[in-house]
Length: 164
Image 1 (spheres, rainbow, N blue to C red):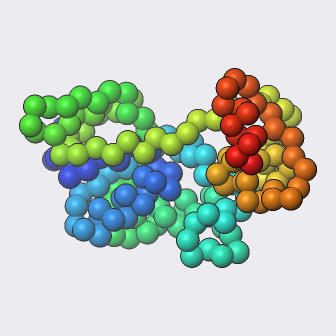
Image 2: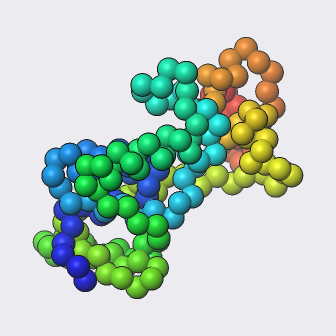
């Protein structure tokens, strides 16, 4: 086990990377462990991120945020955390999928959302072209005054329809 981190961040989407940027700027040792499956990577153009009034592609946003985090001293690793346990008063120990133990004073779980996506042909391409929207938070504004169809199931589907 290497030296103890100030913070282990599980998840390298916008939330985890924002935390890494701030922690690194505060001179804290921060490690982001990310599976590289961020929902943000699917966004063709995000208008929800401050400073990008004309929008930014999700992959470009993630790349910029990674570069900024590293510039300030955060470390980024691709991988998975398979277990996490709290030590009495000495922080946490995480074990990666590869079996490496990581000790940290604090842990931020920024694991994001995993969508239950419909099984449709060329789904990624359809999302990139704006034909299919995935996130009501991100996309509701984009479809104001437009006719839309919603694919959903369970009790949450109607709530998303009303939100959009």
